[in-house]
Image (tube, rainbow, N blue to C red):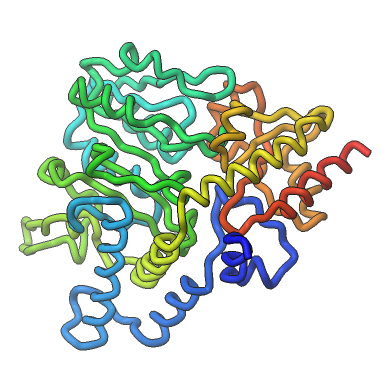
Length: 401
């Protein structure tokens, strides 16, 4: 049995329906082990964490903190205090904006992003720059949407204080080369936030080796529940943070006129957390730890190349991105059908029980640069098969019959 055939059996929605699910860049399906972890928590362990002095609460706290340790290990972080639970990558980016940016950036400072960023990275820093008088700059992309790394020295300057970069585009479908970006940022004393939402489910990163100050990911894109994610913050920056959500759990002491804060990660985890979702994320990481990521990269690349080959000769279909690189390292393909709105193509494919994404994928600027208002996106993961790809390709061929 091939690995992906074995994995398919673990996903109820995949095995219990005839859906050809190719929208994994948006969210992945959940294995039985994650579903059971959520069910088991609510049935047997449901209690508040950290503040309950009884056995059930202590058991819930233990599971909660075990999940934090799993995230620490998965990311290769040095300490568990460097891991903050968030609702996802979007909240993680916004946490950096408010907890670090508001304390450390001032008018005239440069904020550098890339032209392939998701709205969850672009919009928070765009709005921060507008409100605080910072200068927003971009690492440019070429006509295929590939970043031009030869511009790093001119874009990231001595005035640059922050750099945000995605580990991989959710439109172009290839990984970004983030190491030279981090190196250049550190040369000028800037800190770096890496958006790992697309790549954390399929590539291993070690924070101690990578060297970035911040890293975010969303659990729902890597087999976990929705509404949960994690933010890595390097311990060396903890003293430069300030809380931006105030309330229970993050306070050390409170008086009528003033309060004192707890240390990290409590500092940035105000209120009752998403306990069950954190436990579910831990179960998802347990599942991912058993996957050979080298196999996964080859599997996704095989499916991507098969899909590209299948539609390359279909008239009036334009593939976005560097096609040859996508054949070698891709996990998704965005394309445009001439004369048809992306939404109409997706609705048409749904008639064949094929689920794809359509629109600008929360990345309007790069679509604008590529000269299209939106695209259709097929994205693959561990449970997809070559039969899935063939069904998708054959459905697209029938558009032109």
